[in-house]
Length: 500
Image (cartoon, rainbow, N blue to C red):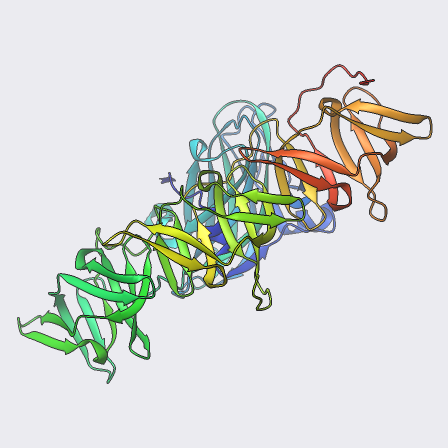
């Protein structure tokens, strides 16, 4: 089965609790090859790195080995995915600009049987791809699924599309935990109402509409959009919708009506309900996937107009306006101490990451997918996360700056040249001729430059700031002291000439 949607949002992975299966941080080739076994006719995996990030390098020799229809690697694991709160496996895959594969597959096995899922080439993009594969999307090989409670092997497969050699990099193989905001135990054949005294009624819920009052106003929720509702204490009810919205508030409905198998209609007071769960169906699937920009405010997740978001991020590199169309995620930094001005990380859809604080105490959003739609004011201190549908994509030919805090910015250097004081005197070099730049660990002004078509240059930078234009974003001013490295991995070699 080819999964056309399995490459997910950056934040989809980050929003989930994760158990790392393999962080790719091997001490050397010997330890990596001891963990990863190459199938017959497949080159062994190697220790790799992309932008300073450790990876498992997978050579795919489709040209050198024309008879090989696939390249495959396997490693031992000990994993139990049978629990409801463990929904699948994720990994990050780095792909070249021209990818000669038909599909990239992940399989998990119990020693005898395998379950697999495949990602089509059209759904893999140059640069990093965040891949999330759920158990429900995996197919059993030979109609005999792996035992989810006793998984012993994990397998990666690249299937040949063209007879061209290439290399893939993978990192951070992990267990995906359930989205706890949307997790409700769901029956398969009937609706189920569980009362606080433990009594259970199964049948068909008859309510057409639910009215709920929230801090952002009252909303009317048609029953066909409701997955379920749960009492969360102090009279508050949590309602999960089919588009992954989560609404918390006081329910105006006094009763829920449910018809049991004998046709008897039960009327249950809303305050006596512990959990109401609608049955699984095509209209109410097991997995609620967001299709619109989402705003997480405390325990609420609400769809909103993502193009109209008047936010500015104050960073060490200057203030940056945050146009919604260029973003993937605005997320409160994890484990940050309570503060009036909490720090946030912003991820752009072209690969950049910036940290800072949001300007102002309040901002306005237009909630679009609840009835009635309305504009409301939100306090920054209530904000947990904002997400947009999409996937990260690093444009070919981009310059990538790795900052000392581990973040990356992607785009182009706005200046034409840089000047380095070498042992032979100052030298001005065009930025278009720079293949990479690495700063000193102690003295960031001391740099090593790799230049297209000539020897490396070492010296001290004269400029203390790099003006950098983010891909589909503004120009920021990066202090050299904040830079770990600069790379232009996909740039073409040019004739070197010093700008005087």
